[in-house]
Image (cartoon, rainbow, N blue to C red; front, top):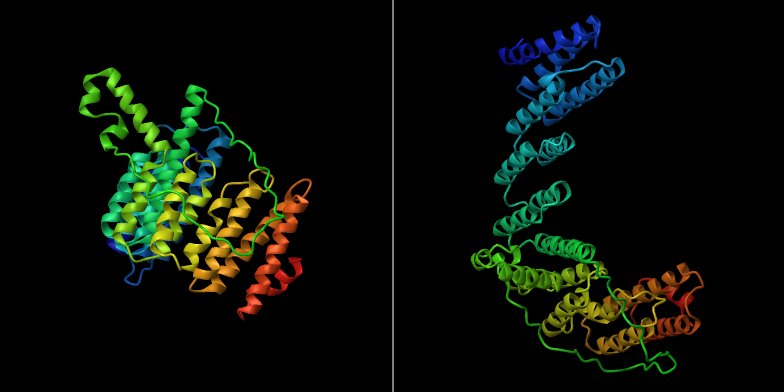
Amino acid sequence: MSDRARFYLEQGIPELQELERKKIFTKEEIQSISRKRSHHEHRIAAARCKPADFLSYATYEMNLDALRQKRIKRLNIRMKGMSNHLGSRRILFIFKRATRKFHGDIQLWKTYIEFCRSQKSYGLLRKEMDSLLRLHPTKPDLWIYAAKISMDDNNSMPQARNYMQKGLRFCKHSRELWVEYAKFECVFIGKVASNTARIIGVEEDDDAPDPNGLTFDDIEEDSSVTLEGDEIALPTITAAELNGNGPEAKEDEALRNRLSEKANKDVLEGVIPLIVFDEAIATMPNDPSLPIMFFKLFELFTDLDCQRRLLAHADVYLMTTYPTNPGALLCHVGESLVGIQVTDPSFPAALKVAFKRFGEARAKSEDKKVLYDGFVSVLCDILQRGQAVENGLDQSLEKAVRLFLGRVARWSREEKIMLENAGKVVELAL
């Protein structure tokens, strides 16, 4: 037996003696536990030890500790002081030894951190998470993982934001990290809006129905599209103002209140995600996939009042910088439909705008197949959502969608473009 294995086994003898003395385990079971631990200790002390050996040891100890807890509860035995936590401490120590030996194994680290979460050992979790990030600072997914833990376990946006900003120092060219940072900020806006409405009792007004009552009898096959509005001017907001702890605010209670109101107002207007968007674009200015990823992210947050502003900002940039990119054009075409239900009175007008934008996009797209396939997916999704509605899609609206599907099929044949779902398009088209 190696000296190291003997040393660690001897550390557990008092625990086993106590378990036998309190009749939680029998003498035969204690001997079996000793043999198992000896087997695992020798495996992890061997020269050809693998991460799986540590995981196997930790799994055994987890199962043993679960059994111990059940017997303690069934026998109604009181464990005082540290005696009740010896099992989890042993498991944590096994993981600590494992990560020090195999510090490059990310999955091993994550298993360790997840066990810390399950034990609510947040101090140790934070310490080990920081150790992992120091060892692997150029892996964007680890910074995102750390930020998610901060939000899920501690509900701490400042801590999550700190992780994301540190990650961007090391991985500034990671599209995933930039987009995830914006996602965190959008989630934060939703929480701020929810808390504000709950505290002050403000109910959000629904969008007024479209007074025009537009129909689709006059759908034009070709139409022009213009972008409405110029670049969005962002309000300036400092970190001190955002947190409400600037030096001026500390001197004057009324001023602090005004700063807090301004900070909350700017947050709810989507200032921070817009800043993240602009910084990301400045870092990677020649990457059309990045603003498209941001646009698709903003599409998901239909419950935010600032969603239209976020989408408009990304849309203006896409149309200004990449006016012929099919992905950018698809974002522009679908922008008017985002967040509007098929039963909403404003949906027909929004769909008509999408039809017009698609007519303009046809003439500009550098890859019409991508454009056609993308818009066909949008139209098929509308028909599918209509089937899920209680009374079905409005007849005139459904007819308009099917007519336009037929036009897209005809255009694709004329331009010798094979649609991805040509058979389904023909089936659905009128």
